[in-house]
Image 1 (tube, helix red, strand yellow):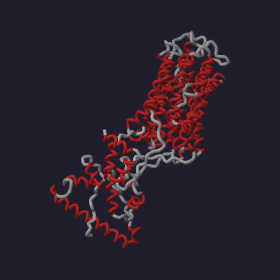
Image 2 (image 1 turned 135 degrees about the vertical axis):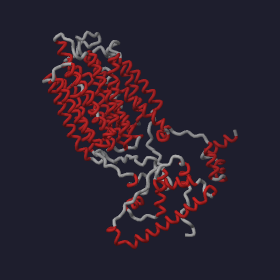
Image 3 (image 1 turned 180 degrees about the vertical axis):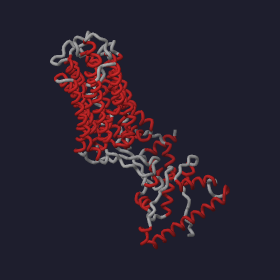
Image 4 (image 1 turned 30 degrees about the horizontal axis):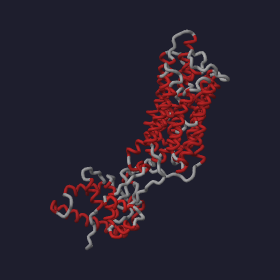
Amino acid sequence: MADEEEAVELVGSGNQDATAEKGTSTLYERFDQWRTHRYILPRQYKLQTEEDTRKYSLWSVNFMITCSAINTKMLNPNFAIMCNPYSGNDESFPDTSPFGFNSATYFLPMCTLIGVAIASIFIGTLSDRLGRKILMLVLGWISAIGSIVKYFTRQTFWGFCISNFIFGFFLGNLPIGMAYIGDIEHNKKKKELLLGMLVGCFVLGNSGGGIIAVLMADVGLFAPLWVGAGLMVIANILSHQYMIEPTKDVVETPVDIEDKFTLNEDDEEIVRPELIDQKTLWNIVGGALLDNIGSTGLFPLCLSPLALQAYYGQFVAVGEDPIMSVLAYQWLSVCVALLVIPSTQMTPWFFERLGVAGVCVFGNSCTAIVTGLLLMIGAAFPATNLSFGFFVFVMYAGFPFTVFSQLTTGPMLDAIAPEDKIGFVQGLNNASMNFGMALAPWLFGLLADATSTQAAIITGICFSIGAALANAPLMRHPLMGKQAPKPPPQKRILKGEDEEIVQKMLSGSYVDPELTLEIAKHRAKNGLPTVVPRVRPYAEEKENLSILAKEASETFEFRRELADRILAALSNGEGSESEFSKEEFVQFLNTVTRGESVSQDQELIQHTVNSPLQLRSPNR
């Protein structure tokens, strides 16, 4: 007990006995005593030090975003039945005035998405100020309550619309999730992958909500709201337990001459700007808005009313069996969003070859092309089982490529965001996306009723082409265009190296051979190839032959001494003063000189790096 009390006293900064002890104890003794004290590492630092903690925190955020998306699109497959007083379903609204069927069907989801879009403008900035976790939990708990409230307002069309609009404000947590990734991940490639996965979870949630509605069709049109409330409760509990608020006080490891490398020299740290490039910001946001409006021509217009009328409505109208049933239509509409999963897996490959902005333009172009093909199949070809098969094939084969444009907006905005504006720019991204998804279907529905379905879809194609043209200038942006391929490691400066020294080596200039060996040794420590200098032609050196001879002489003397020392060590064999065997020594030398990674003697290399050989003789 006395030992425990003494240990506690040593921690107290105002304790006189502890001060006296410090005066009499050596630094090493105090260090040993300090190591016996109990400590608690703050949770926010575990995001940097514990891989599992970081993984679970990201999973909880992804699950929260998925559940919010499920609640946003939970009842979409049922809206057509809700807004049809003659559907035969007791839960259909008795009246949707002043809207007709098409307008009312698109007005219901518009109410929710308008609320999400308006809230997104402010939620990102609020999370910058108040913190990511607290705001995520507040939105989550209110959304769970909102699903229950919406269930009890299902009796009237306008009552349900108002509750959808109000609680839509609390479903816009995607900007918080995207800003959270920007906080905890500083590697460019990994961040792009994580943002793509998060957007994938969001789109997957949109599809998941529809799937739940279809599966519960026999239970009731509004019954899925209870499932949505339960999922939000689970998501909140998991986020409370596992999500960790990131700290702004990132602990920077001091650079030491003996430990200047990371195991992955290709890591690209994000250097954030101090101010937002307003021109680029609104170019990205405007392009995203045009893209989301254009995407409406593909989905839902190509399914409803185009496919619904071509393969169902016209057959039912004449008393024939339709090619596509209502249930098949519902499954087609909800499962198409699942194709975002392969999209998230393909985008890193496309990013490397086209750049983020290039992939965005490619996605806009694919949207226009796929929409045009579906319009041609559904409107120009006779409605047969074969044409319906081609219609489904083109939609499902082309949809993953059309999603590329939506997966690129987040990384592009993150690249231009200062540290304190990450949530703000991602909020603008989510606002533009939801404004497009909210208004475009309703306006296109009005256009289709006033003109024709084909005219509405062609308008959507024009918007997709406009989005591609608007985003094309971003391909010239240094952070968003195709990145120039890196030279091989032996031909470039690696992360953490002394740039001046390595640049001199690469250019073929003279560098002290001791420093050359030191750099080669540190590269070998991480299994990286040694520097390959440029060989200068005679025309560049002919005026400096005397200097070149002097430098060559110094390098020769150094190498000869090193060779003599190596031969001496090898000749002594196992019984020498060396702490390693002849085989280990040879393997280490090969590693240093050739930069090969050696798995079986990592401890030896570490020991040698920490206690390097004395390469220069004191007598020379």
